[in-house]
Length: 234
Image (tube, rainbow, N blue to C red):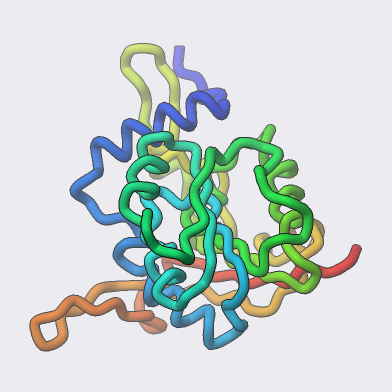
């Protein structure tokens, strides 16, 4: 009988390890658009000190942070992705390492200036969601920033499929929730973050002079949400 998959941390890790293998030739969002995203963010807030990329995958957003001489850590549920990130980035003096995205986070209180959550918030299981956001808030310094990129008003049902073996129904990319600007701002406000910036927008790649460049496209269909929140005392 068809049934919704009951996601657990272990199931999510298995799913992403397999997806990483299956889509290893397809560049991730951070690999394609990480630099464009960072350019948007640094126009709104200072990116400085120490950063955490939670849900870092193979570490492609950290490439841009390291280029800016930002010390950074990465965390992810996929062991394969963590090994790849560690191998790629080793030797850079600003790279501080990667670790499993287990809770509680392996970082001290009020240690991080900016936390990035890119293409990740949709995947956090319901039983881990509140704890995850609380941990992100715990490791952020007072006045630290929380940067989120997520799908904008995604119709989850249209992306679902069924396993013909067990009958489990799941979103093809493992998405568990959908956000609009209003719902994301409201949720983060309840979690202790004041909105600094939130915009629905799209990213695309364009060939200019024979080179692929990332374009922040304000005119096309708005497929992404970019949110920047600032930690405040509740």
